[in-house]
Image 1 (cartoon, rainbow, N blue to C red):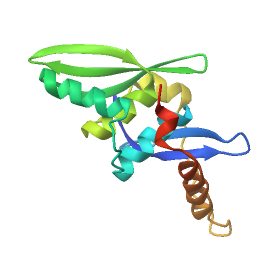
Image 2: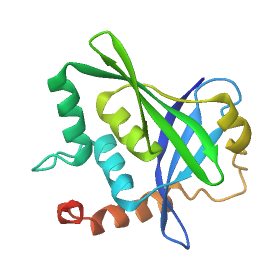
Image 3: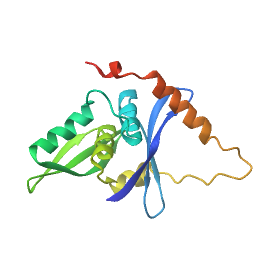
Length: 165
């Protein structure tokens, strides 16, 4: 297993599709870009930015339930890539009993950010889908401000009612 960090969530243009970017902490610093849904992108962004909602979102509720049951989220792992679909697992400690639950990578990362636990990927996933970002050339304009602005516009369009069932 290879430890990753959450680089961020951004919106791919022109499709306006949210993408979660994870990067290898050591070694070659390979990145994984995983397309995710808008609600999950918002949930991750809110957790990263420390946004407090008036009522708990699903990921907040899940963390509260784990805490109430005395279980701890030890780590999350991106376990496989089947076609274009990534799979992940939650690794829990339930009072000394290890427990693994299958989940989507976006949900796993949303929980990991809230629980402040590490994120991992299987080596095979990085071998298959990881890529090394090329360093920006000095003569190319930096577009990070533009990317941040696009994401802010996305966040501004989302409201708590979008998560109501």
